[in-house]
Length: 162
Image (cartoon, rainbow, N blue to C red):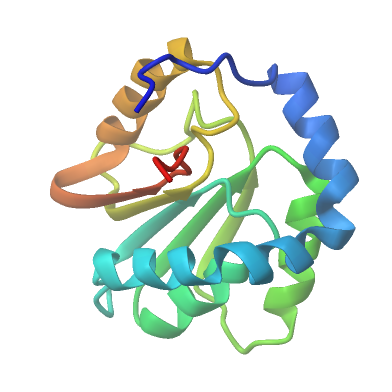
């Protein structure tokens, strides 16, 4: 397998513009291409009722509803940089009876949460679009908000060998 680092990726402004633009049709791609990985991420996370969960880059909220179902006695915070994704997620959540959550429009490089606030942090496909030099600062920020002994689940695409 070729070990070259692929040049990524997008600036913050480009990411916001791109995801605001694709938000209306994102579910088609998300359901068709990401369902299996999303389900596996939820299994690996082993979210227990009563936990505090943070999902970073929640997109249109395809995972969000399932996280809420698994954690009716807990709390879920969600962040994304795209207002259009946030609006679609808010619409999706309004069809449920869930109330123990908060949505934030912010960048994952500067999470607006206290140190050690979360039992579980989940993220899917964020690192696929960011420059490699952002990986360490973002992971340090993830670690900062995670409780000691907390769980982090990252889902990323990789180029297959076949």
